[in-house]
Amino acid sequence: MTDTRARNGFIIITAVRFLSIALIMLGFAIVRGVIDLPWEVGAAFAVFGFLEFVFLPRFIARRFRDDRRR
Image (cartoon, rainbow, N blue to C red):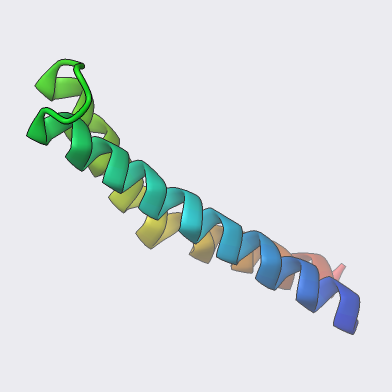
């Protein structure tokens, strides 16, 4: 894997993690009533953000590893 490809993969994974944390925080703000949206929307955002934070970087990393073998 070239250095450029590895750096790009790292940047993408880091951006996904930051955006996931932002989605979780948005969900918490909605649930606590800071943002005036239904509670269910906030809960869904928080859960989706958590799942995205945990699983999506693994899929992205796997994609970068699989492309290397081709």
